[in-house]
Structures are given as C-alpha cells and as structure tokens.
Image 1 (tube, rainbow, N blue to C red):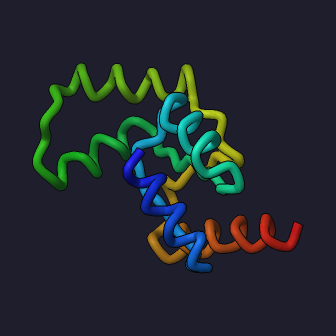
Image 2: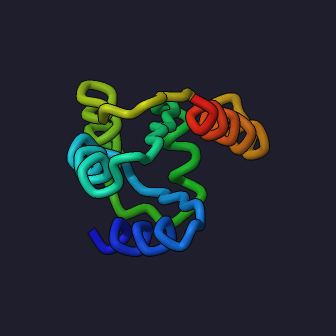
Length: 108
C-alpha cells in the first residue's frame, strides 16, 4: 500500500512511475484498485531459468518451496495487461519491450 501512496504522489506531480514487485493476483488487484490507470506487465521465466537466477543470490526457500511458488504462479497468474516470457530476453530487450507496451498504452 505504501508503494501505491508514493506512486500516486509522483503521478500527481506529473512523474511517470514504475513499480517493480512480485506480482500475485492479490497485489495485481491492489494495483488495479489503488492505481487504476496503471499498466501491469507480468514477466515470467520457466522454472529452470528461475532457479538459475535465484541461485545467483542468497536463497531463502528450499527447492521444493521455490517450485511450489513457481507452479502456483503458472496455475493462478495475476490479471496483468500483458504477460511476457523473458527467458531468452536480455535486460536491454526486456526494457525495450516494456517501453513499447507502455508507449502503446499511452497512445491508445
């Protein structure tokens, strides 16, 4: 909720906002309610890639817990405006794709 309040303040000042968050159906609903004009993009990766990426930082979940969360996301994805698979996209391509979606939304 704090992210929404902060985002609303920036938006009121004419500043565009990006909120990067773990997106669940519940957080998606919150953003829809609190930031109704927002563009919601759900970025996904296949499980092996998710595990590879997770292994590059401190791990707080067991492999089984991680797998269950990944499967839950696939079984009950958030109601995003766009869902993009980013396994094969490098950071620059991901940025360009989200920028394209953002601009397309703005232009109608």
